[in-house]
Image 1: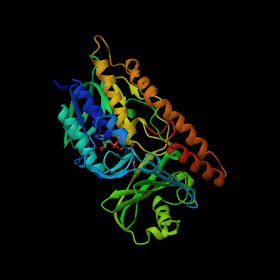
Image 2: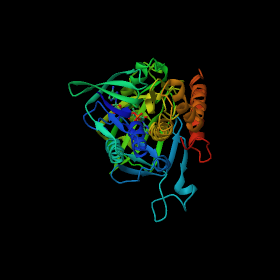
Image 3: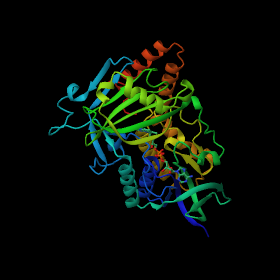
Image 4: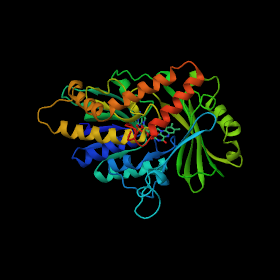
Length: 391
Ligand SMILES: Cc1cc2nc3c(=O)[nH]c(=O)nc-3n(C[C@H](O)[C@H](O)[C@H](O)COP(=O)(O)OP(=O)(O)OC[C@H]3O[C@@H](n4cnc5c(N)ncnc54)[C@H](O)[C@@H]3O)c2cc1C
């Protein structure tokens, strides 16, 4: 007989590791697989995450993965005028580096962060198989499903009650179930960032708007710790005839920051895709749910997906623990819909609103109007009174 689990999770990123940790702690038997041979590598992320996001899912604020504390934001318009939101000034008794004060968030090392989350998951009881690729799944007559895996070079089938697709932006798991996972090229940002030295930063996430620098997205300068910084941008390929690399070179050499960047040396190059898309309309099927980037649980304004992967992962696990311990339930699609309902209520409705806001900005044909609208939207988003600031 095939090995049997309550959950099989495909993907060891923040979403998969969090589902696994909470589900195993709640008594479910969990197998988590990833096709990678090294957790968290290669890094395809800038690693900005709020303190609230970590605390909400019980991730200790550990120096093991924290590179730099963050105290606020600076949002720039195309010409370099800035809105600065520095919590060290806004709430000086609460935020800062002194005793009794805290940061607003962090830049984390994604390699170490992913390993840390997986260690937490393993300590909670998750069994992990690396170098194991998910190939497909098939519901079976006993109400469970078979999951087809390739572990090293060997094909293995395991049996589970629910398969969790936490397999990221290029997710195949949803496709196996026939879910509409297609992402429009107009909503897929191509991102590139350089890790550099010799660039001063001041504990803020800096966000630079303007079609001139990053058509369809924005550029960023994030502190990286140890005197390093991340300079990056994301562009929508249908809004430019040039590559992300071309835009990043231009931003570094020609923007209002060119003096600031002139002595920088590129130490590392990282890149990847970010879906600036709506959440999937259907995130469940027979014996299957999707979480994290695989379900497009990504903030469509900022492109941030760590917080939503963590909180969506916890929410998925809580639903599954409840559902699988209820006598007589099945794991048919109609019964797993409750997961999506919970998610919409907790997070998804706000993410849909953000998506509509983002769409309105980028549907502006006139570039100066669009630039002004994006700058205002970003400034409003990061405003301390924003209803969205905790997504
Ligand atoms: C350049 C860049 C910068 C970013 N910066 C930030 C940021 O500063 N802050 C932020 O919040 N977000 C950021 N993001 C987004 C963030 O990285 C993602 O939203 C987040 O990693 C999503 O987590 P996840 O667990 O859903 O998926 P992932 O972290 O992508 O993990 C998916 C895992 O699934 C595995 N997998 C895929 N297919 C299979 C298969 N068939 N079998 C087995 N394993 C499989 C992969 O190997 C991978 O390990 C950035 C993204 C990019 C590209």
